[in-house]
Image (cartoon, rainbow, N blue to C red; front, top):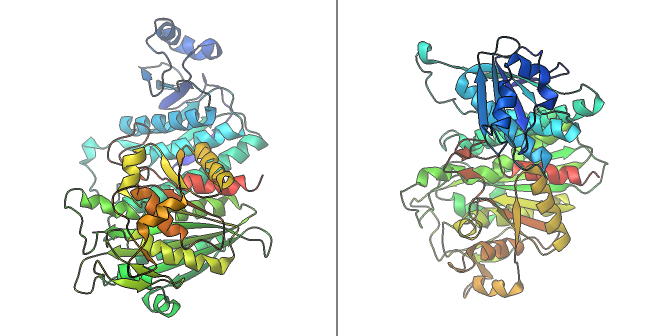
Length: 491
């Protein structure tokens, strides 16, 4: 059930709610909360003066048994607030998670004076913190159940600017939730067909044009690279294209491309059994495209956007591609398959070639592409690859605004030597050295017709541990980066 949200200009002392969350920076003060502090018997001021609460990032302190107004008051620390929207988004997510744990059912959120961007951040944060994937869990016994967070009130002036921020935050939060839910679904449910169905629902909601190619259509198109990955699975692969025409007719679209490996066993080059279940997350790039288009459609942005997804599973079978096979790509280049577990680039090669059909202004692809990127950057930053420094900077800035940090990686011609083939135009793996870079170099071979950026989200699309503000599992990356890049092109 989606979170019900509202703006309210009620005072922090008068609001009646099971839980009132108050976000404070690292130098907290109670001067603006005098009436609330009276209701708390001065406990708020004492906690701050006694350094029981210092406002450090993610620090929390709860007061219970308040006689008037809010039944519980939760202080949430934001730490240093050089990036106030980012700090507010995180604090709101943390507060919403706490509300879920407490079973409060409702929450009110206060952070002083909020402008448009701040309201947007709080709204998106509350939605992120309230998100849970319980679709496949049996409910606990009735006596053990806690009320899920169903309603949230943001205490802010109700004016045109805050309403704009509120609407944008709802759109962004909904897009992120969609991406995270798709990623969390097991591979037997989130199939290529299911991704196509989800795309169809988005297209119908917002009047977008949808094209879906299956195995037969891709064979006719000559997509031998994509189909080599799909030849070991009985599931019909899907190339999904969604066209959002919010801008001027004939204006070149921003094209977002996502890798959609609904499950990746590695194929004949099969992966180790340990943690292979996480390979359901190999479609997070595709989830990001769908989440971004959901948000863009809700916001009715005046710009043209195309979303492209290459969806399949990579399975070992008697018909699966073998290491050493050579296939012909949609662009016409011949590819030697060195490692069938380097399958994402084989799918994306044909999708990136197909992108020429839309005469894009720019193409940004996102993929959980290489373990090498995780070694290079860990789970903190997305690898950003491109040859246009200005465009790389634009994408990194978009990721920063979205709370999805990226880091520029080299894409020098010298790395091309590592993927030269003895029998074909190119090979799909250059071995362990510079693995994330050679994967990006491979993709670059199919992108000469337009400006292009590649995002390697292998380390940032999902987490194996709880991240405090959000639980372990899918993070929603790169949904926010996609949305902010598109919005950035409007200014």
